[in-house]
Length: 141
Image (cartoon, rainbow, N blue to C red):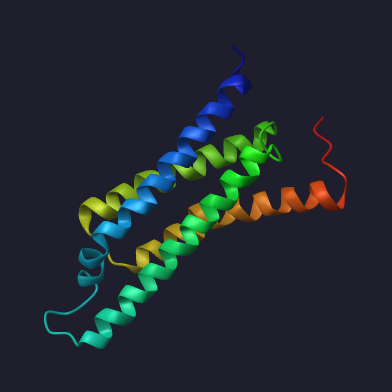
């Protein structure tokens, strides 16, 4: 099997793994929010930090969903360079998300993971989808 023949299933597995890891963060939100608070804190501080983490997780899951939608629709499935970028980004995102869960990192780390791992590939996917509709397809030479 050629190398580009393994990119498609690898991309699917990396994206699904990252989505599962991001969904798993919902179960450990309290620990991550408490890591950001002092010993004595007000309920409003906890609620504000919890809301911020919830928004970051929802946006992350949305970005992964957009990526999977474009992939499963075939817009970017057969573009090897995009597959490699998504594999690297989602693999690193999944690893850091798992460490985020296990170590109970500060909740703001979720925003950094969104900006570095989920956001750029979702933006790339949206650009590919828009180019397919607006420009009539991509030149995949």
